[in-house]
Length: 368
Image (cartoon, rainbow, N blue to C red; front, top):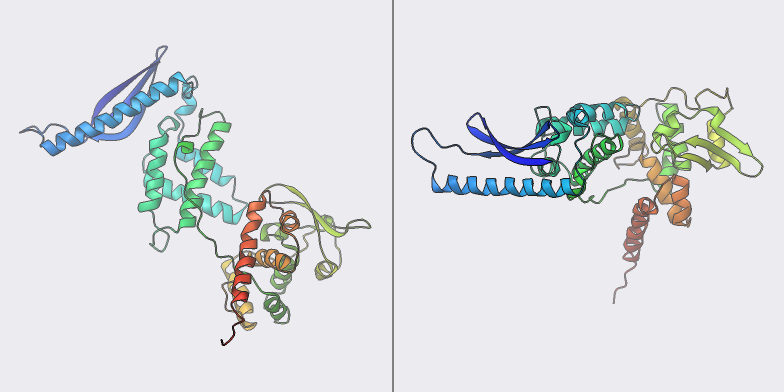
């Protein structure tokens, strides 16, 4: 395969691109690098000439890199039709597949919007290379803003860039791309996450406080006692609530987020909270909704109990994990109860406990 660096006039600039030729077939990769053309009257300044020289050197280095990649069989243009596909449309398709998972879908949808701001025109898979991915990373880091117009938080950058990496990884699995160009780009580090949770005293307080929406209160308290996510509580049906002499009360279900099959032991108190068993295919929590209105009612319930923390439904899961660790349950067991695939995910909660220990140690002071 032959790779040639070519130039094409585009508006008031000269666009640089690579021309791939093999066995009578041609394909192009636009480098998003531009030269300043010679003006009709006069000539370029020394500064402009130096800038053009630097850009040409960069383009030549990319060309040399492509030669090496082709030699090492990283690039394979046998299936050129797939590489001509629209990457942004492919990303939208992956996003739609996540529509049932509200939080996950929202993140993918946000990334799709940022991709279209970064790259307003359609882009084929053949042009999604390391430089393009690096450009999107730079966009997230330096230009992208939230809905409120503020720069993205560290965790938003981390999450959004990882969604792009996941999409490219899927494109490799689907046989569209031969390798994932994001593997050559440094990912964002995850920022420290502030995980709000309720103390045992606060949990007792909300138990004794009225909530305007009874199913919401029951579901939230059930999550505090079991660690189940909103998505798994909302889809829970009576056939999944089981009892056996060996296991006692337990729930056999498939996690909506990870698709992992789980068997979760639950306490007698948690089981009693569910009430009388109904038809196997009937939902356990009837009338439960995920909406801004329900979130408001949740916060109002907390405020009536004297709690000023910004509590969301997911904080119930944090509460379960933190209380289990603080009451002496080992981290490995807690990890299994939460359905975590990796122990490091659970260690975030252990850090919260360590911070509380340090805080407690400073409370006892002597007047010396």
